[in-house]
View (cartoon, one colour):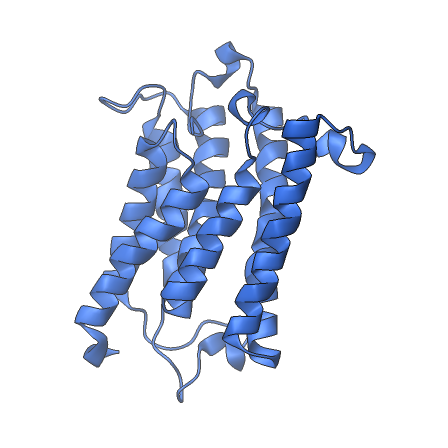
Length: 231
């Protein structure tokens, strides 16, 4: 997706529209919050089933929009902010939720949560900073700027620093504290942040909302399993 694209204004994709679009994507974090709440109060499987139920609802809405051409008043305004390639295909929220379900089903919760947050906030940083301040093109990657790349990397590292930590008294820090606690898992933080940033930057035709959490999470999970005894 051409998010940190400093030629966006020439292509009719201006900064204001990009900012609104990415702000809408913040609501996708609700999927992660819903999973954590249901998993804590019920169990992991029911939480995944609930996310799958939400996925089915989104499938039905996309069927109505793409296949039937339905005009749903409450959603028409949101649909106006889709990219051209999404207008006759499934929207980014479908791929985001798929990526979230796969990650939460397979990876450690810290790794899954980090990947989901990276694709949300890291992608937003790349889009907003790259579109607004991008001046220095990346080599070999068309329409991408160093400013967006570095902004995304910084945000992804921050997310990793907050989420990817050792348990405290056998619990994740968010189970009993408002502030991050436990030693940061630096190797996994760096691996996931770099992977997420590179994947989002390199991808144009595929959907990074699916690829980033799955690939970054996979790399993080492999490292985690290799050095699990240290954590």
